[in-house]
Image (cartoon, rainbow, N blue to C red; front, side):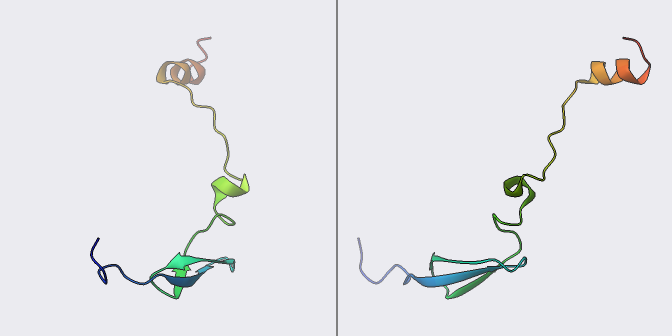
Length: 66
């Protein structure tokens, strides 16, 4: 590998819009995030589990054909 071709990695502080912060390695010293694992609905468990039904089942339920 060639020397001096890769950017330097420094300790980076990631700041989320919800106020959470964490540290990791990056090319920049500070990064701003919109969504992190603490405020994303999938990781919080607030994302609803919807039962997926097919088109035939939806039609039968709509017109009470069961």
